[in-house]
Image (cartoon, rainbow, N blue to C red; front, side):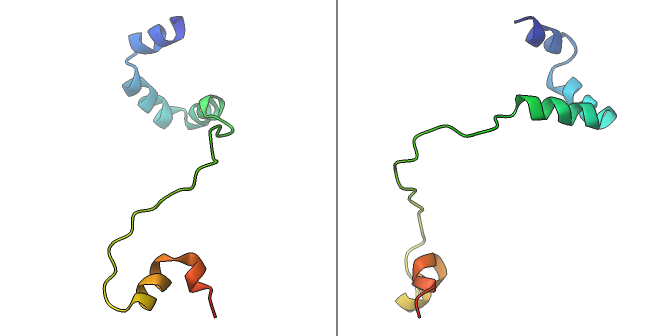
Amino acid sequence: MMVLGALDAKGGQKWLEGQMDENPQSFLTLLGKIMPTQVVGDVSHRFVALMPPPEGAPDEWLRKYSPTYARRP
């Protein structure tokens, strides 16, 4: 691809880092054009977070790591 070849010829990442300092407005415009505007993917599965094993009183551990438990009266 010609654009990537030109970027590589100018020094690649190092050149872009220089542009970030020398021309921040232009750099941020470029960044805005190449960043995705939405995330696409399968969100039908649940996120599972690994928690440390319980220590001390179970109620204290649940209050700390379970947002739904913390809201209980």
